[in-house]
Amino acid sequence: MDFFYKIAERRILEAIEKGEFDDIEGKGKPIVFEDETWIPEDLRLVYRFLKNAGCIPPEIELRNEVINTFALMNTIDDDKERLKKIKELNFKLLKLNLTRKTPLNFEDFSEYEGKIIDKLTGGL
Image (cartoon, rainbow, N blue to C red; front, top):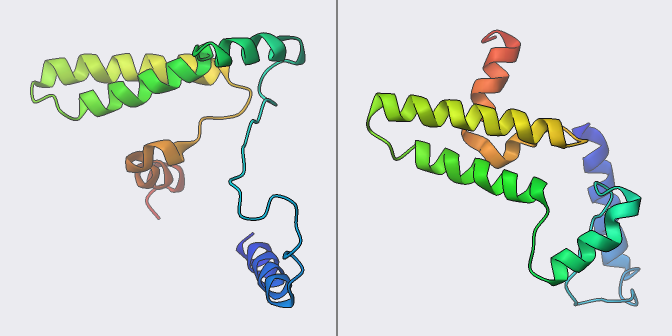
């Protein structure tokens, strides 16, 4: 897959050098990403209203709870309390995965990435 990324990157750099992006609309302005593909079509308008009111979707709230629980777990010295937080974290991760249409992105938890790869590859 890296091969295709390198080709794409090279072509983009060549296009930049040729000036093919000089007259592009929105040049120099930040890109606003509002990916609503994960929201069912019939709920998108409601979610937009809630977002404008400062509310966040339950999936995002749960994701934030997972990140906060993980951060808190790393600060606990007592083994029993840490075990409780690990169980709570596992439950929240399971719940989060069940609510998502796409798998959990482990890049959010980079500390686990190496351990997961080792586990899946058998430590090869």
